[in-house]
Length: 149
Image (cartoon, rainbow, N blue to C red):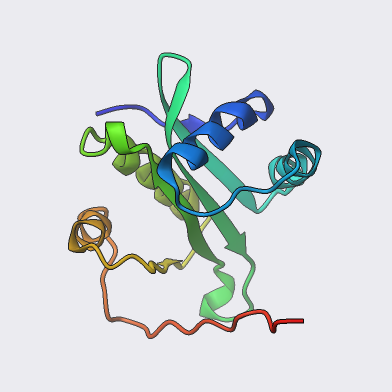
């Protein structure tokens, strides 16, 4: 199985290339804005970004956001976001590696649970998440969208 590691500041160009190739969503632009956001993410103690690489190219990533909690005996919870694998590297274990690293970090930091939402309709995506240990249907997800100006 491929390995995952925490993202480094120098990974930003490769991550932006991964996002472009995967067509998941528009990345932050211009480059200076993306760099400022990336620096904030890496400096935030409750945010962890994991990557899996082939040679020097990042081919998968995900972001774990952890939040403190007064309930659940004070155990926090996590959100998994931006799970992306390059189309040419899907099915090779890179996505599973980054998700596994994120979950291991959440459990090590005493999170009670990790939440994940997916807007994807492809049943393969849902089988992937279930294979990583996520259980569908335990909760109902809701989304509030930013009002149009």
